[in-house]
Image 1 (spheres, chains in turn yellow, cyan):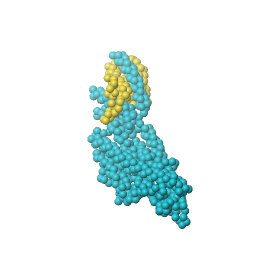
Image 2 (image 1 turned 120 degrees about the horizontal axis):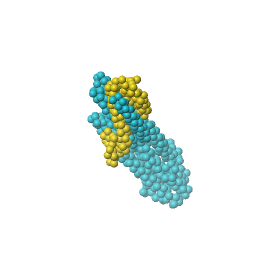
Image 3 (image 1 turned 135 degrees about the vertical axis):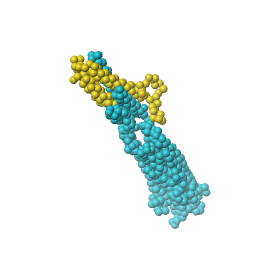
Image 4 (image 1 turned 90 degrees about the vertical axis):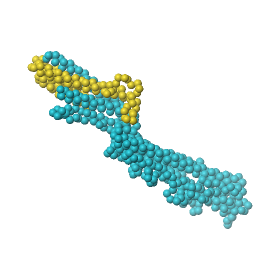
Length: 113
Length: 474
């Protein structure tokens, strides 16, 4: 498998992971981890000898890295939201508009969006 | 570049979906103890994906799915209505029970037995001044006992009247809240889980007050009906109830307490439609149980029937006898004969009678010195047609009334116990379906967070690997 092919396959897997991350079930997240392990294995198995077109391969790798960074943002946002939830879990009540009432001692920094 | 923007757009949509999903979990937790709140579940909708036409695909947060089950809500409301009905009856009847003391130690039963015992003691010693005085004393006690019983029933009646008025006011006030909910729906400001929780809490409180039917319309509003027929709220319009006190027909017994009627917004009598809830229980006691005892415009009531029978027969027997001076006997009791429903309240001993004028002698023939006193002593158990009430002796009739009241109290208490279990069961099932489990929500979020953190680490590894490869090809 050429580097180009591995990049394309990796990108396709990342798209799958990105979509699967929206399903907030633990078993789905487990599947995401398995997919990411596959990408790691795929990238590790290659070697520099398989590079046939350095310019084209670099473009593929840069595109893959952009995709990875977007996914990193997505995962980080999800983690932050969980932490935000933990803060808001201490909400004191409920307004007439259906919004939680935060306690006055709520930490200044919040991950809630 | 358009591909990159599409990617970013997809990612941003995905982040919003995350946000919504976690917001729902947070709302569930914040409202775990909010009365009437039903857990919501996040849903995700797939967006159309077509790169050729610029549709980036992805996923967005859908409308939260409420776990509220209207069937279960209706079951809880129904059981609540039944429970409140029994509770109201049991509470009101508990005040009546002591009047008809089943042990015979207090109340009318005790006073009547004491008087018959005094007649018996007098018949053994018809010339005894002490025995004669005791007869007067016990007769006076009996009169006071009937008056007190009538007074207690009257007090209970007033108390129940006040509760009925208060309950009707509460129903109108809660119906106004449902109307306000409908107004928000029509203005497009409804559809919130908090408002939904408040609505269902209001409906549950209402079902405790009366038998109501809540119908959820397509426009999001709630139509509220009393007894499934009388409108309380339709859309943004409320139809208030009111209570009225009047006799449906010309009363035979003047000054008797009139029946209570529930009137709709047009003044129509809808009392028959109030079968459940506190109001239904209060109306049962007020319009059925209490009149059967104290009377109303049409009936005398058991208490007055007993008082009249005792007074009339004692007076008739004494009038047929002669006192020690040879004079015709005087009546022992007096009462207001203008209203059959006022006998017990007005029963008293004749102010003209004295111990010396009590007529024990039956002139016969044959003349019997203690004949009248003997007849009076046996009056309570006598089955002579003139002495009975509906074929029962006076004491049998009194006992039957005691049993009826006791049975009503027992039924209401048993019904209350069963209904409490039914409400608990209905609520348990509802909680299973709609309730928020804090543990469940917390575990869910912690699992998610751990999953995301693990994925973040793996993404870092992939990022590092990619950087290495880029360096290699550069």
